[in-house]
Amino acid sequence: MVPGPAFESSPPGGTLTGRLLVASTNLGDPNFDRAVVLVLDHGDDGALGVVLNRPTPVPVGEILEPWEEQARLVPPGVVFRGGPVSPDAVIGLARAQSPELSSGAPWRVVIESVATVDLSVVPGEQPVGLSGARLFSGYAGWAADQLEAELAEGAWFVLDALAADVFCVEADKLWHDVMRRQGGELSLLATYPAHPSLN
Image 1 (cartoon, one colour):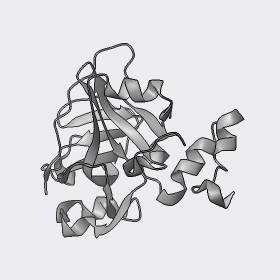
Image 2 (cartoon, one colour; image 1 turned 135 degrees about the horizontal axis):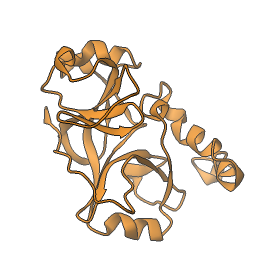
Image 3 (cartoon, helix red, strand yellow; image 1 turned 135 degrees about the vertical axis):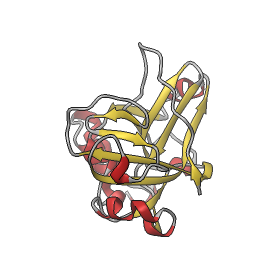
């Protein structure tokens, strides 16, 4: 496995960095069926994120042993499939022990106390104390204006992210749980069956 892509700061205004993209029932791409994506970077050149609800059976210790203990702090301690782009690249998201944080290499805050981390720096040498990490193989990527076009087509709901979403234990319930907590019409969609024929 190789380290994931570098992250550049997004321009101010209109950025979706740190927000969730939740697949709508209009999205036809099977790669993203009921996907919940955390946007890690969004700017004029496009967008990049990781799918939060696709665990693999591969324990973190099998690919990056130094991160095994941190992964076990946020069960199930396996690598997650972050998206279809560059599946051999690994992106790490870690939770800080202290919520009072500022960005700085190799630590870039995405939401609350969660940041992308340089996985080549072992947990004990990170600039802050860690209380759990999740690793993602591959990522979801969009070229310039591609995500905006998908949003205009109603393919995604843009919703607020919580740290608990990143480290969800029951990944198969995340789409439902995120939709349900929105209230109103979106909470009704949470009951929409995965296969409408089952309705």
